[in-house]
Length: 537
Image 1 (cartoon, rainbow, N blue to C red):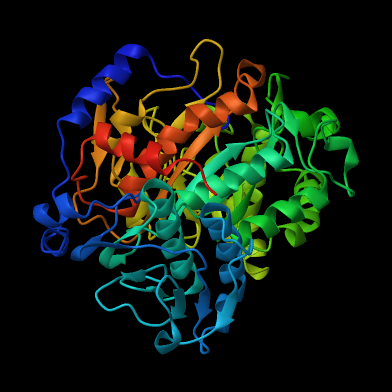
Image 2: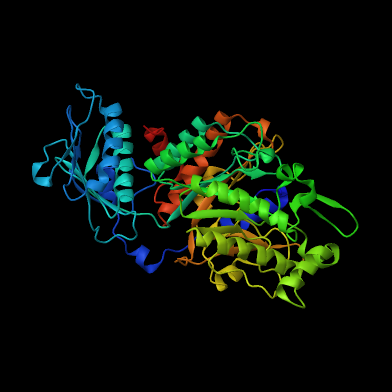
């Protein structure tokens, strides 16, 4: 999370011990899914990650692209033109045909020749969701997706297998992700990352079948996107607005959605250096360098200016508004008279500072929803009290922690009707810090112990921690998970070191979020398979 707290070694050991002993049982539907038999697996191993849901082998032969493969697009599936052109370039770099290119033509299954690839849209019986695909490898190879995204993920499986084994085992793959949100959250506020590095990470996400990149671009230490309306708040090292357009367009090509994260009303120290008159001040005169005084109309106007300027840069469906680590809510009524007065003026007698914060989240949510956005916010400041103002249930909660009592438990958000995304700091955080040198756990721990239903533990009043683990099948209200790179000490690692450090963790998360079943292969075998697959084309 933005002002991230490092857990003590002892507490982390307790957490690992508690969760390591828990194994999520498969749901009845999962338990009865047809999967590759042991005999089939031995004869026709699949070099695909994350591991596919279902595979039915058809003999021991493999489909191979041959010396002059073609990509055929079913005439009814012209929406696949862009994906076919991308696959053509990628395939050419692996196969290296004599002509230098892999032609893309319109054609049907009846017109496919040995070594060809046929792409089409259609139903995928026995699957679930909009990203499902069916891949059939015989003399020719076909990929059918419910949507273009499904065809794209089928093409990732094809390319992975080609890179690792030069072919695809004969048979039928039926595959789909368990959750629709599979994300990387990148803190570019504290550390400047170049556009080209970010583009490479987009390709890596897509290679792992992850589909979301969250750009946390505003922090206490920096503001990393060019602003024409408020140039005074922007860091010297920043991405231009054209850079953002390029990143968003490139990501769309790889079926990755970019989510902006403008963290308010805390973590605004860099912005507020240029606007000290908008800082939050305690009754005793203590100035909060990082906190915005949301009781001031000019403070709220500043945020709206930035939102309105950046809305056209991010055409995706989601917008993250932050809302974490603002003030100590249990004592805030005594410390911030202006916030208390504002809350009671807006929401009536008996309102508290917590109501002012919830009301501000709802205010931003209402505006962004009017612009077609689904709003996301961190969990830690909400549902802590019985308040007059209820957090709008349309706000998606990005649940990162329950480090402090009495933060509201996960169940409070589910009971409140919110969709939730799992950002568990105990498993899904990589912190660039000279002392910590990244942040535990290891990729092996993540692979063996975590699942989408395992959230950060809940702090108890006595100082102990209670695991928060949802039993399988995990409710559909949990949309998925995000792995976070927090740049606490930006100079501690280079871009290359960050990429190398986080890649094994992202692979492990991708497996556990794509297929909810306990992996059938050990982590060492999974790691070897990923190594054989290698980097994206």
